[in-house]
Amino acid sequence: MAKSRIADHFWAEDNKALNILSERMQNSNSTCNAIRTVFEKRARIEEEYGQRLLQLSEISLSEFEESYSTFSESLESIPTATEAAARAHIDLAQHIKQLLETPLAGFIRNQKEQWKMARSQNL
Image (cartoon, rainbow, N blue to C red; front, side):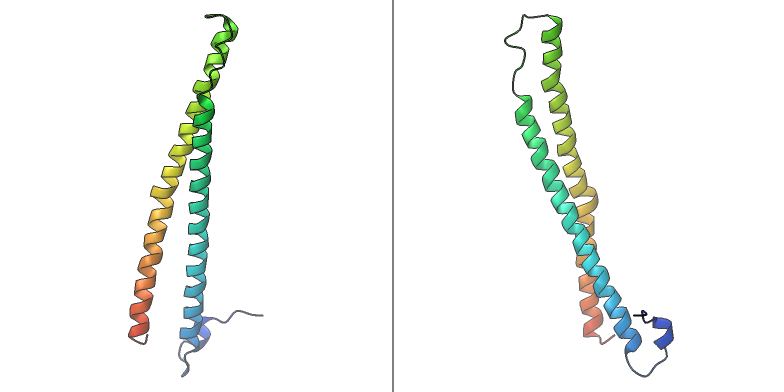
């Protein structure tokens, strides 16, 4: 089915152009909500994974090896690298929340308020 264009109904007596615009705005709102949900879930996954990696990094691997052996030194680097990866995932979760999720939630809230105002004014 061909999509109706606002331009084709702009000067029409009926509200067809307004209905087209309204439908597009509702679709856009649904898309924004879906994107926000993805950001929320991704941040939660990153946070949980980071926390689990932090727990994993607390396991000592070199305690059964001779101190200062090459193998012991190699084993000691594993928890450090795991902790660094954990912190990177936790930081990513915070960035997703601060830079993507929160601003998008604000945008959706503002659009909803503007839509209510427009509806109340019969626009």
